[in-house]
Length: 218
Ligand SMILES: [Zn+2]
Image (cartoon, rainbow, N blue to C red; front, side, top):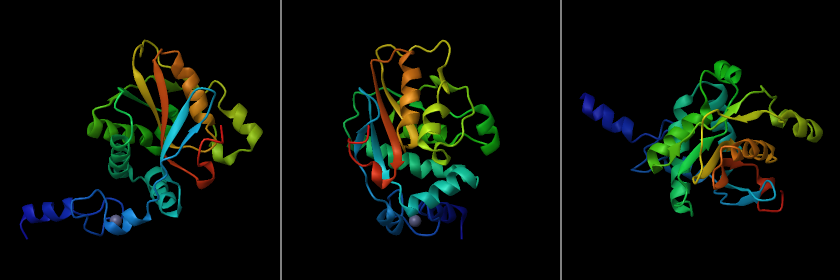
């Protein structure tokens, strides 16, 4: 086999299962079948809402476990590509920037990479939206899903700060996170981001659990 044949074959291999052919798609047919489109939106505070691309089902749970805890940073490529497809299908033409929800430096060091930023980079590459690191995470919070309701409320207080010297006046920003649960992260990040002055902020999450469908869970 020549090197070019090898490259050709690899290029057509699914980036999720790393086994099946994709025939020009982002993923193979089996993996695509396992994705469940969400497409819902929900209000996480009085004025802001968040769009969600896919339901967090068993399949995505497995993918995100690999992506976040097993060093598979390269999964940012198919995840970012799916997100780009979602953005292109939706009504986001007027948005100019992506602001990734930041990680605390200690958490980045522990993981070895910032997975949300990698997703944002892929989304930017495929859509032309400009990444702006307008937020800092200055408090190393505990994982929201390990806390009860009251702890979740206080855990994120003061966790996000606007990055110094960044002005987003007249821009429309998609605030990107991998996952949305209660919307508290989006809410606190939005508050801090508002100080950078964008004209509009809209949340964008790759995935959310099934019980957060719709707009009734502000
Ligand atoms: Zn596959």
